[in-house]
Image (tube, rainbow, N blue to C red; front, side):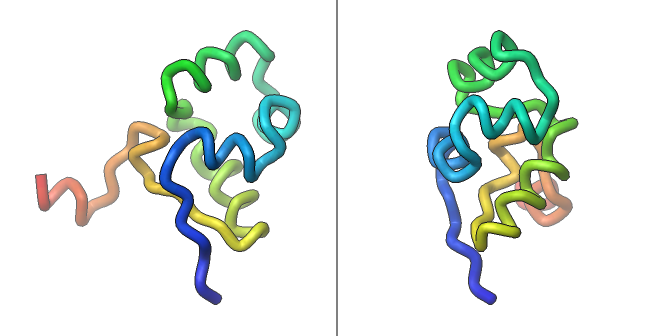
Amino acid sequence: MDLENLKTAADVFKALGENPGIAELTGAKPSAISMWRAAESFPPNTYVVMTSALHALGKTAPTALWRMKMPTEAVAS
């Protein structure tokens, strides 16, 4: 299955139901989610739950949106 590659945090917000959907997935407070939106990234501890939800929708997003590096990205740096 080919996953649609989202490019921005705004794309992820839209795909996962904006602030209410992200709050339901992560258990985060609205103020925290507003900060994520302003920062255009997510905390690393939300990576697994959010990317799992994206995959269920047939979507994916770069690990950099969670301020994480994958092994191949670390080698290329």
